[in-house]
Image (cartoon, rainbow over all chains, first blue to last red; front, top):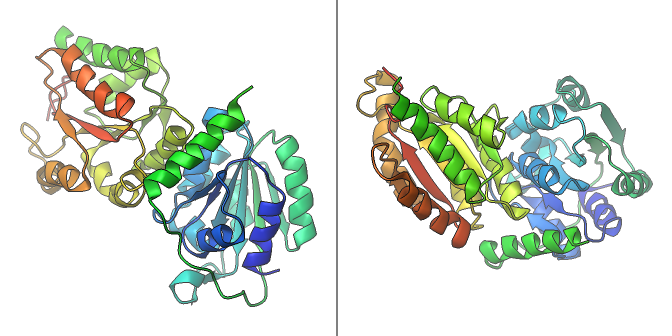
Length: 190
Length: 170
């Protein structure tokens, strides 16, 4: 499974649930597959995707998905500590791990010796999974979007070459944030 | 500590809560300790280990329709520059930053002087409207200004806290 296939599986398993996509190719691939109002494309602020997702999940108390990367997680792992300390937070923290900084030229992420799942567990996540196929993403999200009783950390191992990546996210970022905020408001309406 | 400084912290916390601000995120700072206590008693405070993560949490809360407040020292403003420049400002996310002024008179600590000098120009270049708290002045009109910026116009703004505002001493 490559990054595009993983992101496609995530988008196909969701309808209106908020999804925060991390910096770089994750945003571009997602917006190329389907540009839905429940998508938040974090085009800058590398490392903060989990923090934004935590902020949303704390306020809505509804399942919130973060599509993180190995590089962006390591840019600022403090989000792990905050989520790990929030026992009942409905956060679905997906980490697409390709071992590369793909959008900046494919440099190696210096994490060969690191165990991201052990790091998440040490930070307090009680539910930590590793998956490497599309069917597992589909079934995991099917369950978690139904009931997500506590933060879950999911390392998604990627393999194989990716498709050529689609264009950068364009359009006014303020308008993008307003569209996303409106979709959360609509989701929360009784 | 004078009763004025205690009352200022309480009055500011109460004023912000009353105008619908929250949630409140706090990061380590001695100047703000009395304000932290007041916020904790009025609305609850989530402590966050690093300032840019607090800004990230506040971004999420703003997207969920709230009017969040991030309390930090200006050293943490340095830590938050990219979060403010590439997230809060371009995405126009409503939040109030309450930033204490280390390295500004009467704080002579050398390690804080450069950030003390940078704080106001940095906020100006980030495009964040800024007010310096006048602890002796009318708090209501100052809270009114903050409310008009963040709550009514849904834009980010900063309130700067001079070292002695809540009784801190060098």
